[in-house]
Image 1 (cartoon, rainbow, N blue to C red):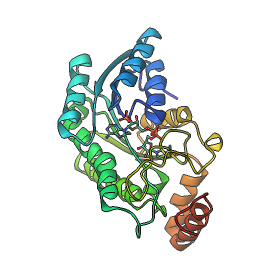
Image 2: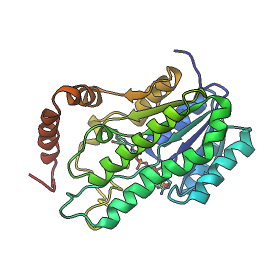
Image 3: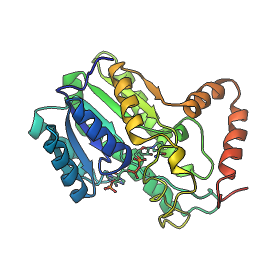
Length: 272
Ligand code: NDP
């Protein structure tokens, strides 16, 4: 596969952990200049230093993606450091675990603020630079963005909203050479289930699934890079995503049943 990330400027939100951190390391090793955003400034600082120590190029900006002005600062940091932007990866995200009956409405607002509005703000400020470079706008969605995942209303809703946003930006830019991709990892070992919000908004602090049996963040990073190289619209990663996408077209009720069955078997599932 052609290394399209060599000498390209790639902005990554949620770069302090999990998939975002892996993308930063993998893409820097592929020759990309990476620009890191997340709230944990110390982690970004350490990651940027590690990348530079390995011969890569990195800049960072402490960013809370729920704040439009932070997102603008992240984009400005990239432009100031490297003169433009070739790829924006809207990856910052949080999850939840509670059924709709029980969930505090604030939890749903929080999910939309981080996952959806964070994508809106970063896309908005990066768009002129991405248009100029005929680059790639990437949203890290989920299998939960293909079909509603029980116990994750706010998460699925935020990922569906991201898809609506990104798809429309793609159509609006059809004559401008902008590539827009929605990437849907399946379960990937990371901090996302530990930080997931429960019904009252407190963090779950534990994972209900076997993290060791999941994809690694590095695998996800490499698949996303391939998707960018091939200028794909939708980047599915493994059997869960491909099967969900395919079967939903013909037998959506079967997907309902399978999702219910699989998720209800999690320990402490909020539904049985
Ligand atoms: P992690 O919890 O390991 O990483 C999440 C990242 O998002 C962190 O860097 C965190 O940084 C950042 N983040 C959270 N809130 C904010 C905020 N308000 N502003 C800026 N950054 C924020 O999870 P993953 O790596 O797994 O998640 C990355 C993406 O992948 C998410 O969008 C998630 O939905 C998606 N995904 C994950 C799957 C999985 O099973 N892991 C499956 C499918 C999709 P900080 O706390 O420093 O701000």
